[in-house]
Amino acid sequence: MADMYTQRLSIALFVMTFGLELCLVSTSAELQRFNQPLKDDGSLSFLVIGDWGRRGSFNQSQVAVQMGRVGEKLGIDFVVSTGDNFYDNGLTSVQDNAFDESFTKIYNAKSLQKQWYSVLGNHDYRGNVLAQLSHHLKAIDSRWVCLRSFIVNAGLAELFFVDTTPFVKSYFIEPEGHRYDWRGIGSRKAYITGLTQDLDMALKKSSAKWKIVVGHHGIRSIGHHGDTKELVENLLPVLQANNVDFYMNGHDHCLEHIADTQSPLQFLTSGAGSKAWRGDVKDRNRGGLKFYYDGQGFMSVQLNTNDTQIAFYDVLGNIIHTWHTTKALHQSS
Ligand SMILES: *[C@@H]1O[C@H](CO)[C@@H](O)[C@H](O)[C@H]1NC(C)=O
Ligand SMILES: *[C@@H]1O[C@H](CO)[C@@H](O)[C@H](O)[C@H]1NC(C)=O
Ligand SMILES: [Zn+2]
Image 1 (cartoon, rainbow, N blue to C red):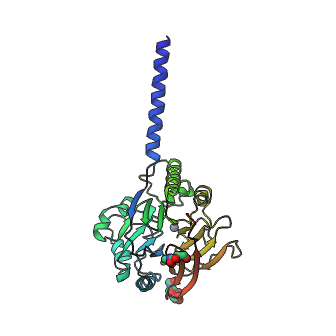
Image 2 (image 1 turned 90 degrees about the vertical axis):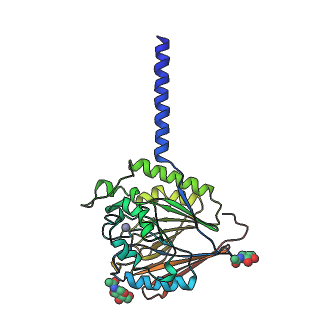
Image 3 (image 1 turned 120 degrees about the vertical axis):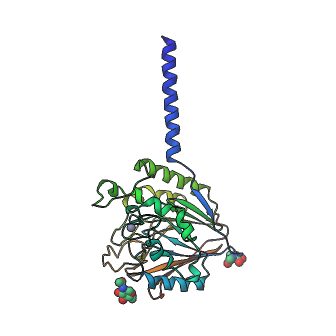
């Protein structure tokens, strides 16, 4: 009797342990890393653009021309895309000519022939997600680097790209007639818990002077979509706890800068790659608001050991907002 009991108990323990292991394996994994080649002096500059792929329309082409010009002037090292890369519904397959007509042919300036590090937006999830993540696109245009979540190690700076679309609960429970391609996500809850833990772990291990997190959805925004509740609850505490310097996003079709009221974190929205001028602006008196522009444009980031310079540009290439921040030498994070 006792033997039988012991045996049952050990089977139960075995199942529990094994089950737990499976669970850990499926929700937590180290994020893939890319090493960005550096300039000799360690300084870094890049452009940030979001919400763009419309085959050149809605001033996408005009913005691209100015990106080329500014990219040349700053000698940029790479480009960051904050998602909603292909409208209206992502890519249909790796053969979809939107990839050529909205990306390769539009961003054809010499200075933009650098790595493009991209996340997915909610519109990308409405297409064939696996196509947009596919290695085949890199064979068509070698600049394209698009993963759900990943890390770019750029010496002084480390950039953490986070897949924010699965955080947003309404896309799952009330998709409003849209079809989302959730292949590879599994359980939403386990996915976002695992991702948040992976990010927290990676940020804790980081010794980079500048820590930058990139996602599609805004944490703080006074634009049409406003704050993303799920990111305020799940992501923001992790960024604040790990001394993240900048959170960069798209989703709202505007250029925007809001300073966090509780930490040195700066929220920077660059989601103005094509369609803009929605005219839907929420609280212009919001605490921490430094800048809001409803029209098209993009952002540049220049950083070195001691300081970072951010600039926003409109469709004509005029600088419409700048921000400069310094870090003392002895400061370790
Ligand atoms: C394109 O940009 C110009 C200059 O700012 C603006 O007048 C025009 O309305 C823009 N077009 C669209 C479709 O947003
Ligand atoms: C950073 O600041 C230190 C001390 O003020 C200075 O010696 C150094 O040249 C600065 N580095 C850069 C890249 O500006
Ligand atoms: Zn979006």
